[in-house]
Structure formats: C-alpha cells, structure tokens
Length: 212
Image (tube, rainbow, N blue to C red; front, side):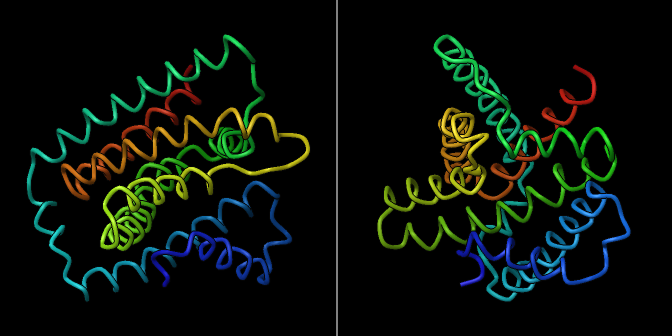
C-alpha cells in the first residue's frame, strides 16, 4: 500500500510540520522537511524492496543498463525541449508551481538540492512509481499499468491553484512524456535504466538553473 500511495509522502511531510521549524526561514524549513520526507520514504522502501528480493536488483549490476539510461535521459531532455517549443508557439506559460519552488530552493541551497533532486528524489520516486506502482498495475494488464502509473506520476508533479492553473495545464504534457519515457526505460533496462535517466534529467535541470 505504501509503494502505490502518491499521497503518502505528502502526509509524512505534513506530519513533520508539527515539529519546531518555525524559527527557520521558510525556504530552509521547506527543504529540511523535504529531506526528512525523502529519507523516511527511502528507509521504508529500502526495507520493503530488499525484504521482497526483487529480481531488478540483479539489473543494478549491469553497466550497460546505466549507459542506456543516459541515452533515455538525453531523449527525455530532447522531448521536453520540443514539447516546450511547440507549446510556446501558441502560448507562453508562466513557470508552474513545482518548477518555481525548485528554482527558489536551488538558488538558496544548491548543494542540498543537488543531493535531494539528483540522488534521494530519483531513488524514492523510481521505487514508488516504477518498482511499486507500475509493477503492481502491470500484473493486471501491461498497457494499463504503463499508462496509469505514468499518468499518476505526471499528475502529482503539478499543482492546481488559481494563480498557476494555466501553467500547470500546459506543463502536464511535458511531465506525462517524461513519465512514459521513464516507464519505457524501466521496462527495457530495469531500475538502473530509469533511475539513471531520472537522475540525469534532474541534474541537467539543476545545472540549467544555476548556470544558464
């Protein structure tokens, strides 16, 4: 149940707000909450995955899966660029809430954000959405599992507010494309492939924010 619950990490994060971060500035409090959330999720997933002894652990020992993951990462970045270009032909969207929060945190705490977005985040999300959700749903039907798990991954990366609603809608196809390509990387090259691709695109995003 934990692995297939997209809202679980949010519940953990909300629970951590009961502790005294009130003396910290908002951005630092948010990043500490995110670190605690991811570490909690990772600890539980680590236990669940190794207890279950998934076959994918053998794939982590295959170097070619990592190189293929890098190729998928490059494909995702190219797809993201083309989709953004196409969308901008018709509408120039504002930065969506998820990206805006990342931009602010990277600017203030680059080292911590690299650790979160390039290492901890991809591990937790790949275990949740590929190893957990996709694997569960594909037992019923391969196509159903592929499409629904990708849709859920994309959906939880956007937020609907009055001020960013249109930006969220226009960014959804990009997140959906990323989700399906990560699913494909996982399907072909296992956790090593999707995890490498995920970490690669996140690293590229951080570098872009810091230096471009």
